[in-house]
Amino acid sequence: METKYIVYGKTQNRTALGIINAYLIAYPNITLSELREAFPSSLNTDSGVGEIFIEAEVGYKATANWQGYLSQEGDLLHLSDGLEVAVTNMWTYQSLKALQLHAEKLGIDSHDDTDFYYSSSDTKASVVKGNGFVILLEKKHKQSSQMPLKNVVSQDIRAFFSGTQRSYFFNEDHFQHELALYLSKTNNYDEIIPEFRIPYTFIEEAGKKNKTSENNEVLSESSEESSTKTKSFKMYVDIMIRRGEEYFPIELKYPVKSLVANIDFLGVHLEEAKLLRSQSAGNNRLYDFWADVKRIEVLKSLSPVINNGIALFLTNAEFYKKDRSDKSKHYYFSMKDNMSHSKERHWNDERTIVNGRPNFTLSNEYKTNWTTIVFDVCDNKAEEFYYCILEV
Image 1 (cartoon, rainbow, N blue to C red):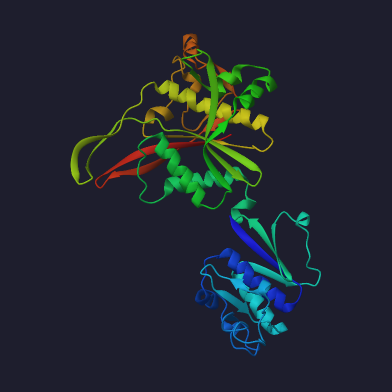
Image 2 (cartoon, rainbow, N blue to C red; image 1 turned 135 degrees about the horizontal axis):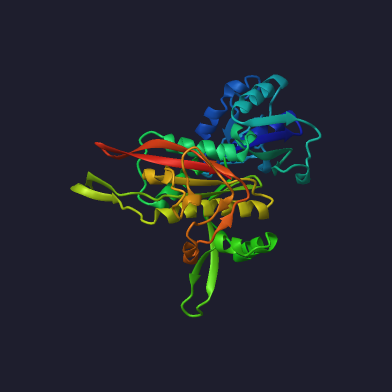
């Protein structure tokens, strides 16, 4: 996200002072030499004083009658190193226009307007008021803010996987951390919140609104408290994104098969090191993915600020993208590549329901598509992985 600075000045020299102050807000640790480099004196050749900036000790504090600079205490620039700096007060029409054009390249727009007193209620921007000027600080996203949020997130996830020299992830927590960190660095969002907690009252409301207790079982992760023997419910979204007032949940899964390689680790050569261990009960991993889809659907139905979400699945096991026999108990939880899926998610073996994974119905039909990528394992070994992005 980028910050846009808009300066309104009461007079020409107050507009110039506002521009310089806006730059100080953007770069609060700047030094005088850096300030002179950012705004060279060549921008104001007709001031008659030679320099745009002067140290206060050299100026009005050294002489009783100081001319050519804005010398009032409220006009001085206070740099982070303790230095007080004054700005020239001589700005002609031509020199101000040169400064304004230069400032636009630095992300600062300005207007010399006698009617410059803007109320903060007139704008959603933050307002900084100075002596004879105001600065509006508008938070503006990059061009991606013009795209629907789901498109931006989907593109960013694909870019994350296509990055050069990308290595495999040790576990799901590692995957979650690296993806959240990458998304935060894109500057496309206001907040990236891993492990976003949904309170139980919100989950409870899901059952009421949808007139079924099914959602409580699918949405929540229950744990039995040894002292009371009662169940406490909790729900965490793996990654919650916020852009403006819109929120966007990402649920991810990372089931893997065994990965063994010869590697050098901390100066020690390891033969046949077990980098990843196979996860059993692949049918349950399939169920859990579709349960994530259901969770996102319910969050959408309850919250006016959630329009979409993504269920993300990453694995190095081809098992998950293959077809399932219609006789298998997890047939209706298939994630077959390039396959459309009905709303019904149920087990062929009713006994499976007892294991805490009840049948449920989705609100929409979906199609699963897989993308193959190659992750580096070590210098002489690579491994194929497969990911599926399902927009909900």
